[in-house]
Length: 275
Image (tube, rainbow, N blue to C red; front, side, top):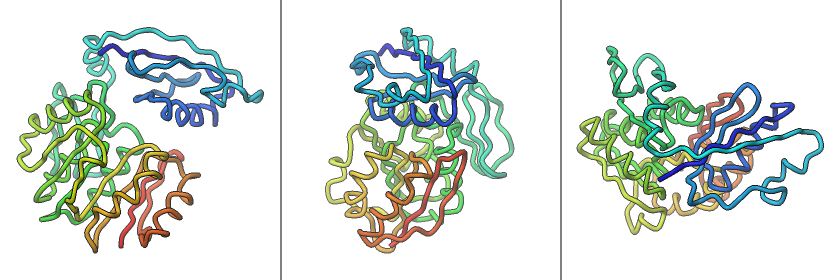
């Protein structure tokens, strides 16, 4: 699968870069890299439908100047790019997320991820915060759902921390393949990876549900998550900005969930809801 890389030069870069990332995410862009002058964004070539003033509202805002260029990135070049630019991520004193070419370190949870084009390396604020919440969550003997699993990093940490069974689901075939690879790479035995969305859940329930997805998908699917959450149970959510927390929390509270904890990093937020 070929990907397109878009380089957006934005002036002034803040807060326009964050707004642009959110709008591009709704158009199917999968990965983002903030640069000194703006944003680099990546989308599968076959999913790209074009960009214009109607698709990106920020283009119409006279307060910002935005220029962009694009190029095609063949899939076979992506691993070399990650190997060059993928540093180790340390989450507290216990958890290390590293690539196969990094040396291991003496930590409790050593997670090896070859991300390719999948989201979930620990570098993005939302993944880091979800890992942080998971390190605080009692997982021993629990059933876990990782919805929108990306690389599978959250599912892998869940098993390493004692979850008895973990289902990891992603709608993207590339993420599905990558999660399968990473599950095998970490020698996990209790993770089932599936290609699909919430329709895959059938009648199964979970003690803990993880969803690090964009705001619109979360807002739509929170009622479905709740229908598959045991009581008592925990719902850990991220993929949205702090400004969206009230809307997400209001949605959860209307369904009987209460926020118990939140983590904030660079205007992104992760929150734990319980019932």
